[in-house]
Length: 285
Image (cartoon, rainbow, N blue to C red; front, side, top):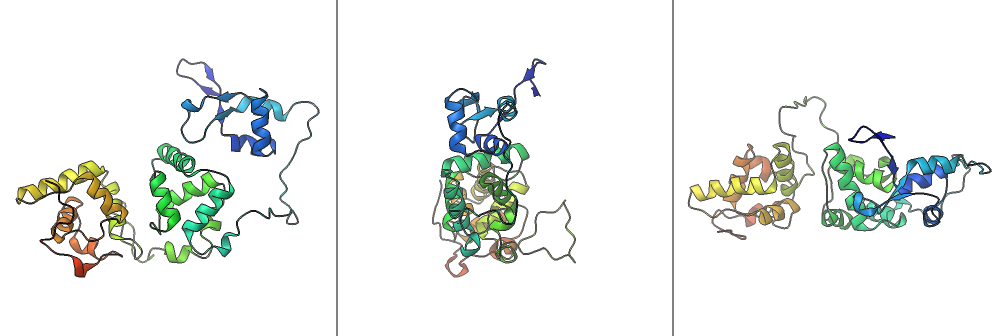
């Protein structure tokens, strides 16, 4: 039980998947128990992430009711494997593994994204929306933030190590132990980070919103009589949809993020031959 704002005990609520694991039943059986009124549910509008929440007290009472045989999850090495479970070791990309397991869990893209966002809001880590998750699954975002991947693994109920099996060394190479990490300094650039991902990493480290960073860049541009960029165009930079911004925009971004042009330009995916200090592919008045 949790304590409500008025000092009284407020009922605890858990997700249907958690309730099913506690009772040792399939989610289909759990929803039958809900439909027959044996388990109370919280309205969908009161929760973001899953469709409904189940009363933890009702689940505990149902698990202890007379005549019910306790079902324990088989952990024996001889327990038969689910033949429909994705063989993640045979799937070569991280995004395809995420999609395969999400579909196997029968979780829609919006529901999975909302559940990750809810976990991120509770822990203060990086979040995503359905478009971001879709780009991860299609490989447009090949290396999502490690904490974001941890949230995804928890939502999909799959060990993070299984999602990364055979890929971790390539996607998330260990930092050089000879170089100490100073928490007062911005995160160091990795060899797999794209230009847009580096901009997003530094923006978040400086606790800037997309709107605030775009306004800073535009102010620097207007001071020199140039055009700035809007939040939508900055979003395209971070997502990789605008892979070759003008040189001056890179300079403004570097100044606003308190870094150097070289730090941003050395990232993966930059087409330096196409960059021009005069070109303005996405001008904003």
